[in-house]
Length: 585
Image 1: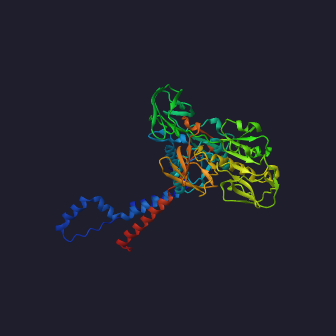
Image 2 (image 1 turned 90 degrees about the horizontal axis):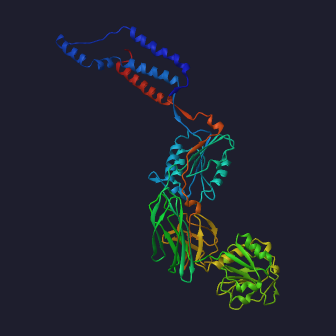
Image 3 (image 1 turned 120 degrees about the horizontal axis):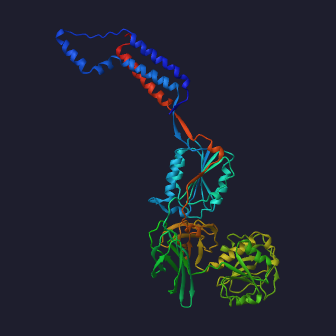
């Protein structure tokens, strides 16, 4: 507690003067007694409660003295201090990655950090707060906010996103809020190296809150399986991230039942590799270690036995722009000799103009042009049907000079005037009835988009979409006529719906999921990044900016408003006492 205006201490002479006046004024006590017979009784009552009698006779005096003392105290402007966060503004960077789910002090590290943030919010003292969450794309939860109720409401809503933290992105993003202001940045994470902080700002102080205790964690680092002639062979790596030897079991199961159970012992801070052979043919395999450690998200891992067709093999007799179109969409592409197309053993999608191989190739194929027919000139605009291939690629402004004869029995999904331009076979292969050099298609954005859609369409025959990271965004050309898909867990719990052509956003929690559209189903998995399987003990530390450290980190709260309320009550009481005695007295 302190005083802002000690200069007004001289006003204390007023209550002292009033006190002296009461000391030297003449005092008379009227005590009417109707008869001497009652004198003794009156004296008994007076002596039985002398303090109450005294207070009743001098109530006005005490009320006036108390009021004057409070007035003097109010003139001195008393205040009390509360600890406040340093800086002109505050920034919270909150790690929402999967490792924040590690158990710490009978709760998760994330919940522990949330409680700490709530405590710090009470120390804002009117300073603006910005909250940033980590992830592939850092997000701003509140920006320059001073409303404590709104801040606490948003903090209560925060959840773990399970994405990789990408702390460097969040730190770069946070710098846009500094604006040469004295800023205190609080980072709530598990572990952060001091060298990762941008310490070039003199006006910024850094406060890192980490995981300060050792955590017991046994992790399935890697899990892979492949089909062999004798069944399925699986390989599992189990890592012990603690300083003590751990014993547990490894359980392998498929969609039907448990296949293998094996007792293992993992030395401290080491990794062991286990192999299993001749396993039953399965749609997917799940590895699980039933141990009660402090981080359970990495205790299981799943692999599907269906390979997604992610690689594209382009016949080198085709125009180079075909290969370039696939590469521009970040698709893995390899060139092959024309005579080796039908000899290819590696899994993937083939792009060629050798239509005679359509019945011979046992893999999805995209045919661009024909090497067995002559093209004829055409004239007209391109008309397309409602097909998934054209969800992203609009061909209406593409010029086509000539096309090859169509294939009988194939379904035409695009025409140039009355002539077929794009067809689909019964097996799902795609045929473009023109060479690239016969069109101006490569000059349009729809060209690489069509190639990407064709790759997605040809992969759609496989019921496995692949493995995604939590909240991963990816456009999928799913080819459903309903244009709507629903996401379910393997336990048949509904998650959300997506529209064909819209961005696919993977669920945030790791596990197995099913994408459904009427009778059609596609499986996919959500898995943690390798970095999110490592629990590392961190530190909590502070690195202060020179200008921020020089500040007084306290806030003053004045007593004066409360004193004025008490004074008002005292004045009312004085008036009532005076009224009852009579103002003439």
